[in-house]
Length: 64
Image (cartoon, rainbow, N blue to C red):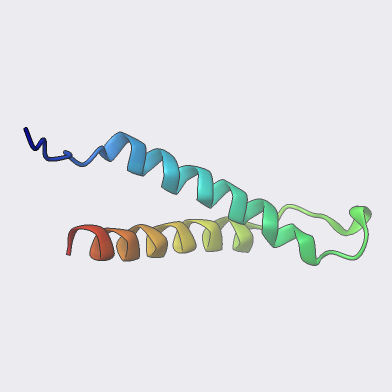
């Protein structure tokens, strides 16, 4: 029997969310000293933009 895999949207959303949070943390690698780390709304916005772009690309590659 050949069972076709159904897409797991919960797993997909979890992968995107995890990757997005990791990208947010990676944006702080550019700081020279820990004392230079400050909250930045720009980094927050960029995190969501990168996560959304990654989701669109993954959906197009997987299901397109």
